[in-house]
Length: 416
Ligand code: ATP
Ligand code: MG
Image 1: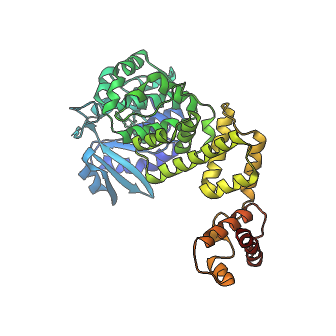
Image 2: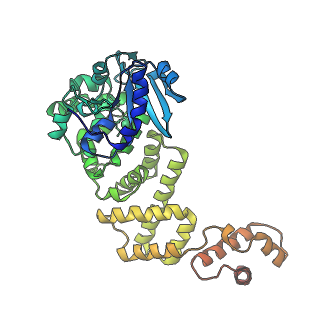
Image 3: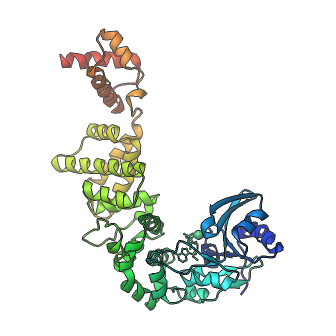
C-alpha cells in the first residue's frame, strides 16, 4: 500500500535519505505512522533505522544522545528534532516491565514485532510504501484495538501496555479485541510492577483524550488503577465525569476529577505523591482544593458575599481563583452546584474587576505608614496594608497614595 506523506514527514525525508545513502534502512514508525493513516495531525515524527546509535550520530551535525542506552538519539535538522531509534528487539523482560537492556537488530520486522499494538507496529518508507505486518490498517478500519502478537504475552512482558491500550481505546474511539480485553482482565494485577512515573505520564495523555469521559469509563472498567505499585485514592462511585474537555490541561482535568469525587486533603496529597507530582503541581492542587472547600463550607453556612470572594481571591491568588471558576463550571454541569450560576457569574465579573492582588500593588507601602504615624515597625503595618488591599481590591478605595493614607487613619482609629 502507498500512502501520501503529511508535511512533517516530507520535511524529514532528507534525514532518511542521509541514513539510506550511508547504506542503512530508515523508516517512519510508531504514532506518526498511525496518525498519518488516520489523517490526524502528527505530534512528532519518530524514525527507526538499522544504523547503530553511534553510526547515526556520526552522520549528522547536531545530535543529542537522548536515550542512547536504549538506542535513541535526537537529530536536529533544519530546526526540527527527530528521535532516531536503532531497530531493536526487547528480549528478557524482567518483572513485567520494559527491559533494562536491548538487543539491536537489522531487520525491520523484528523491530515492529516488539511494538505494543498492531496500529503502532506499522512503518512507512520515505516513498510512502507502508509495512503493516500485523494488519494494523485492517484493525483500524474495524475500529479494533489489537495486540501485535499474543495479547497475554505482550501485556505480561510490559504491563504498561494495558494502560496505553486504555488510552488508545479512548483517544481513537476503538473497541478492544476480545483477546485484548481478556488479557487486561487477566493481567491487570501486573500493574504493580510499573514505575509510577510511567503510569502518571500515561494517565495524563489519557485524560487529554478528546472524550475524557469515555477514557474514564474505560479506565474504570479495566480496574487497572486498583493494582498500581502505590495506591491511588479511588472514587467509591462511578469515575465518569462529563465536560472535562473544557479544561485545558491534564493537571486541571485530574483536579476536577478529585474535587468531583470529594477527595479530602489526605486523599489529595496521596494522589499527588503517588503520581510523583512536582512541588509546584502539588501546591496548585492544594491551593485550588482549599479554595473550593472554603467556598463550599461558607456557602453551606451562609451565602458568600462579594467581599468574602475577593478576600479568598487575595488569599489563594488570581490563578487559583480563575482555574477554580473553570473547574466549578464543569462540576456544576455534573450536578455538583453548591453555587448558583448567577453567583458564579458575578464572581467571575468581580474577579475581572480586581486591579490589585498584593500589598506590593498598592501605591503606598509600610514606610509611608511608619513615616506618617511615627511608630516603630510591627505587625500593625501588615494588618493595615492587608485591610487597605482588600478595600482597594473590592473597589471601595482608589489605588492612590493620598486616599490610601486617609483610609489608614480610619483603620487605625478603629483599632484604638
Ligand atoms: P503518542 O506519541 O501519540 O503518545 P505513540 O504510540 O507514538 O503515541 P510513544 O510513547 O511515542 O507513543 O511510542 C512510540 C512507539 O513506540 C509506539 O507507537 C509503539 O510502537 C512503541 N512503544 C511505545 N511504548 C511501548 C511499549 N510499552 N511497548 C511496546 N511498544 C511501545
Ligand atoms: Mg510518539
